[in-house]
Image 1 (spheres, one colour):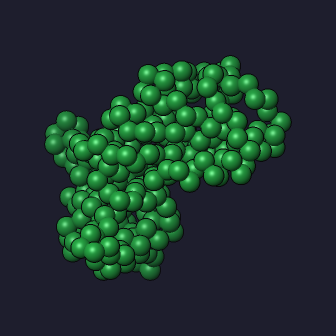
Image 2: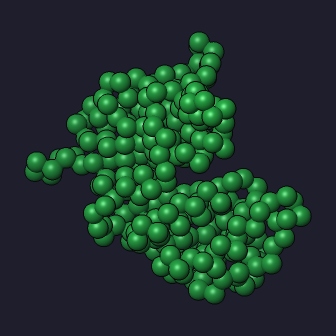
Length: 122
Length: 130
């Protein structure tokens, strides 16, 4: 595969366990990462619930794929952004299950997306 | 759309089932792009989008036949239609029913890994998801 200077943004806008979107999105992110593509993750709307720590998906018969977020750095996925407005609307603290999450207000969030050539949304 | 002799290359990601109007929009957009002499290099079907590849869809005659439109696009323009293999299995689509090499996937579609999506993104100027 040829090298590319394209970067990919993956927007996550669904809660982690309501549909399969969050898991499907993470699978895509890891594949792009393993092919050494530049990937950034964005979380907005109900997608912000994906980064909340200490969830117990086993109690609703779901596999805890959220722990895979801790492995993102091994795929060189270091740019992880979350929408401040979406957090505030849901009264969620800026405490996340991984360390390097950058909180952006709505305008910064939108501007940041502009730098990418490909945007996928789940 | 043309920059010198350079023809833009497009690829599409479809995550919606045949019953979704987003799928109809994607089909219209892809057809228009091809007829405008843009180079559509492939379509990747992910999530519920893989249902477009089912051989056994039977929609009422007076409804939009999304699956037949895909088959027509494939035969008219030789456009590669990639079904995500994992998503296909999750949706009951397989080319090896009961380990007997029987298929319930229409032959316009090819089973591919997620790596194909990466390839399409690398090779296309624009990857479009509706």
